[in-house]
Length: 193
Image 1 (cartoon, rainbow, N blue to C red):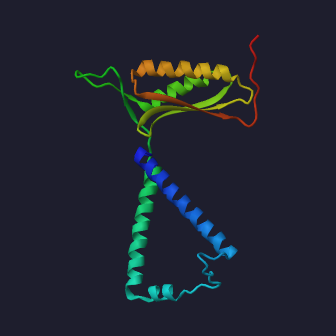
Image 2 (image 1 turned 180 degrees about the vertical axis):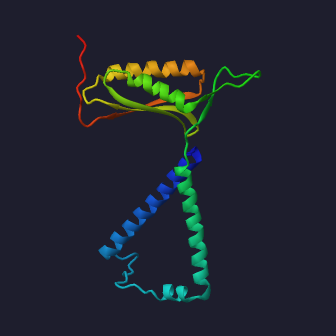
């Protein structure tokens, strides 16, 4: 599940890596120009004896292995944070109270909303799901539309379907999201007279 913490870590890591790449690129360009610093000439060759001596130490292989394992564990944790399924299976309805709890299948509810949206003129197909996105509960409809669809009609119909979904579930914390994909080839949308 992508959480705010995961997004913050992603952005911070991207920022640090960007700074490192910019600094490394600037240093490489500066070295390539051969301009001296404070009157000191830059070396034309590199001396790698210090690095060779470091690698030859007895402890280096074990340290490198431990660092490699730690980096692999961090990488696996990072991948798991991005791949963990964020689909919601059950929705608690707004009518739940101390006398009882009312649940609904999130897949069925979102599927019904997608079916209602699929009945709109110009919509070829639609699928629905309920997910947790950055801490928000989101009913998501993915629809494929015809290339010559009326976007104003699709927008109005999306508002109608989402308001119906919200009123049925009585969940003020639920957000609706519509993702449209335009079909590569149109089948032709019939025009009303």
